[in-house]
Image 1 (cartoon, helix red, strand yellow):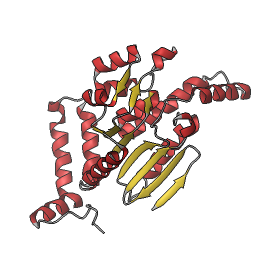
Image 2 (tube, one colour):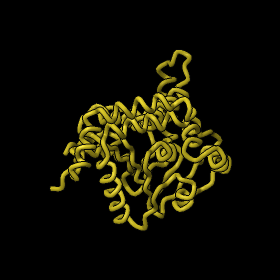
Image 3 (spheres, rainbow, N blue to C red):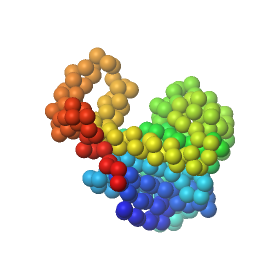
Length: 274
């Protein structure tokens, strides 16, 4: 088992699963610039580590994430201003870095599972939107508070529309409304709502088993294709999809999957029970 402690994260890797825990419980895991940078670094490391097959994002202390750390942003702005930012805009720079974080997690070829508890606000809401599977405790509360604070959900806006659709994204953004876990499930932000912490962990392990039963290369190719399918017509994808399918069939994974099916055995990428 690999274990790394950052200043704002705790990262553990075991049996192909990299669990990234937002670790600022004293502020409900609000995102500082340090946390944003560490989340990007943790993702890059996981993507470059051959035995990592799935990412789990969760929060310490009973909360997922309370959004951006406004105090940290203000301190960063004052520090950069004092150093002389050469006419730059440190607030925009901070916000753009968070946008790059969202995009990186949205476009990674690794499956991303979010475990949602307590508070899920702002940037935390955005991370939930970019994940592939979201599991939530039934007491979890979701909110987009930006407009009620006089600011805007700048970087998460495209991912809100992507995940929730234009109508739901507009409704939540202009009202700043609180959303319960059941309501989040109704708009497809959450895939499964669990009654207690024990059930949440059981659901997480079941989800991980399902993901690990699928071929990692095929998952990556499928995520890439689905991302394209959002913006390209079915007609334009036919030939490319056929070439990708042929490549998958002829790959080591494709041959192993076919042989395993014919021989009625699990393919080699499925973890063996100890």
